Image (tube, rainbow, N blue to C red):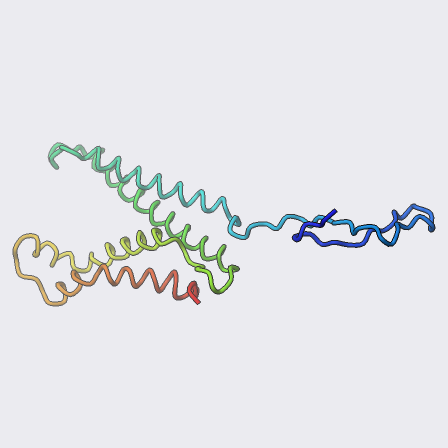
Length: 187
């Protein structure tokens, strides 16, 4: 019998209750003792990954529902209850997406930290891009007045113009620094 290379081979020995003269012959092949199966390190915290994916999907669904409910209605046609529901759907959906993406990114960093140094140990690239988009959107709130002036044809400030032009790059850099640079995912 040829032992499996992943299993340790040990010489055959007589059972403990056998008489002393019942040792196996010297030319007997070694008996392979199976090792417990190594657990894939990337499957740790799988429940957190599923929860994060569900949060993102539910959040996107809530955002889509708020758009469908608002479609084709003027502001005057919206009742106070519907307006409150739309705001709740927008805030709840946005929060669910952000929390789900952050949970997914942090879980990926924790799970992949034990990988060898020559492998990428950070979150998925699409998660990083989505987080960069969220960071960019939040940062663009600082230039809201200039954005309104830009779309209305009015003058905008130099600082507002610079922020509008560079906010996407700043979001990409923030996501890369926070989720790739700080945990040292590329070494």
